[in-house]
Image 1: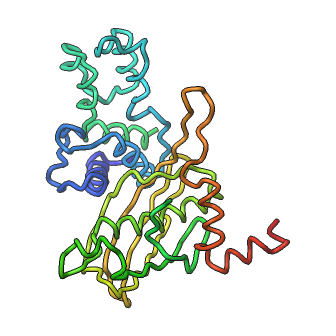
Image 2: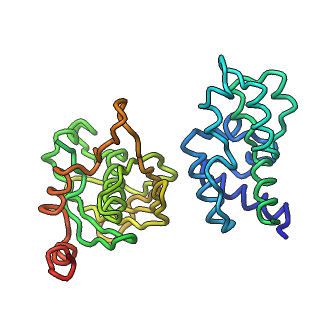
Image 3: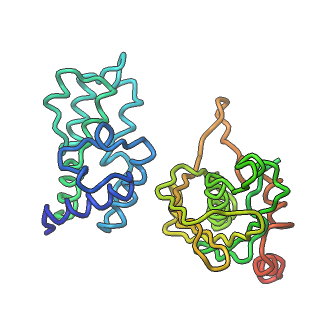
Length: 128
Length: 167
């Protein structure tokens, strides 16, 4: 079973390379978008690097459920609907949704994606 | 018309590696503005040269069937200036080629001296037109592919293409 600290270190290296940031900026609670400046194309790059480094296959939408955001059933008037929140919770159990639920604005979804969320995801995948 | 920033390929190994050259000359108008009295090929255009080498390698590796779009310059380091009279030796290596896109490392050297290094990411663009018709290959269209085989392709792969056993 993979050590969480070991995974964190590798994830930090990946994000340092993929986003061109300093390693000390890649704290566990750092948001990929708000703190590390990730853009949509970076998510594809990050998934690729995670797959290669940890030798796992990450199905599309498994780690970053971007498809959900373009589904009218789950997004109405710029907010995630209650159904959408339910799906989001299922899809990203690694993200902390408590604060987000108070104002489920679509623009805030990207902030849910943190370094720690990736570490939890990868640790779980390696354990299963 | 395309703005080619490579002159020809010397070698292409499908799915792996490509080597191309690009000669810089004072006949290029833009060099006289960058900079007046001191012509230097802009680093952004060196990236374009590397991206063309890498992108065409990625495209050729999949028989030019994908729309290969440069989407991210993950790393770019420049070690010296590129000036008229220099011949850039452009090399690209495929790190990974997958369904979603291609990841490559590329470098430019002049007389064996490192000039620039870059890591590039390309995505495969598959879309459809509002009419629902699939998007045709606008990156490697027919005009490009015939130009490639007539002018850019290295002799080694031309021979393979023309040999009866390859058909």
